Image (cartoon, rainbow, N blue to C red; front, side, top):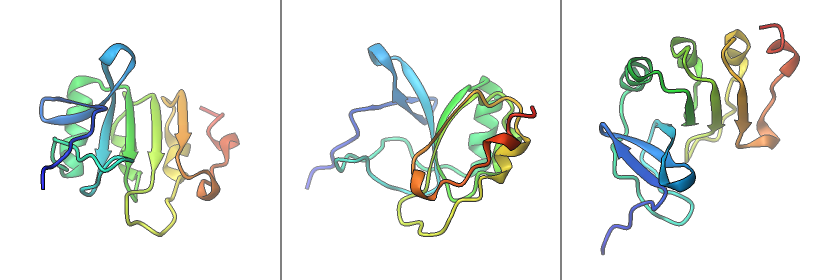
Length: 128
């Protein structure tokens, strides 16, 4: 059986990014486990330890990320991130703790992928 890869992925420096308009580099994909896109395509770049993502974000001043993690506490170590899309990882059935967002002053855009489970008090973010 042949492996089909995600058509929306661009690999740069061994990290996965989603394609943006005109096939340019979009959001960095941060994920904690192997998974496929919505139609069964696999990503080419491997899953990495969170420390590798943090280092890459900071060294390259990455500003946007699509996050598939059960914990977002690492975000405090990534001050350059301004636009976030947060989703539970495949197979995760718990609730994500969104309170680490309250201490981030740099966030300008936020998408919560599982809105029915997304409990964010946006008034706590407005003070920054």
